[in-house]
Image (cartoon, rainbow over all chains, first blue to last red; front, side):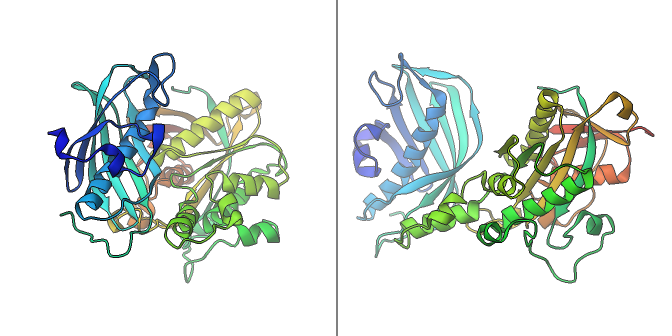
Length: 150
Length: 262
């Protein structure tokens, strides 16, 4: 199923080693699921592990991928976005290990042109390792971009 | 963490557009029209630069500190806000990413969560400890916990001041919106000769409330800092009991209010 979607590098505005997600597995309006396998040498990995707080960035990139896919489908450029708030972040394990495969799931709670709010969850198998509600700011929409998710 | 330490309450203060001072609140003397905080105790330069939130926090801080007889240049302060200077931050982001303008360095300096803490400590020439924290609807509880820790460590009064600017419409839905409010409580160590003082606090802890906050307009009751207003009201009411600091919207932190007369 994953090969239905473009490379994650085409969906998010990040570049180089800051692209942390591996692929998009599913995306529909207001909902996306992405996958990441923690690999040696990956940014934020130290001594074979990564602090679970870093899942905040995984969540942010999954939201970016969701918005990026909508732009991609509409033939538009992807937009820069920023995490401006994080509510109720629960971290269930202190560290994640190299080799862990994580699913990052994001669901839109509400969205406007400049601000959106997403419920986010990161799972390792059936175990939820982190969850949070993120508030994100979106940069100016490129001229002519449609609001609709095709 | 549960604190069993008791502290005294030396003074309270508040700023709300309809009730600009704690005396107005206690008398339920509503302003003829909503007021904006002036930041009158800040110097002219700071006043001109400061946001409405910083000015409201400053008004509450000074009122409580005056009531407590705290020397403004001394002591510690804990500032709490869930969203902080979010209006300034959103303005900067719009400038940078939507209007493609150079952001204002001054606005940038005052967009941070500890802007009010910095402005007030500079205005009072206070080189003591000051900090800022945000914990959503648990901000009052966490600010009180921080203050009680400081009292245990330093043995000096701590001004706890929590506030929130009016909700930016882009960020919070209308049915969750709140209006500007800032509240302050000065906590002080209990000395042996003050064991029988009027009001003491113990906590915060997670428990079952026995005191209820007053009925408030929704735009006040939804403010994440309303727990500190409820504490001020509980002190005003003069009844001992356990008070929720989050109106059920946070993690359930409570404070025990203790009066010598029960």
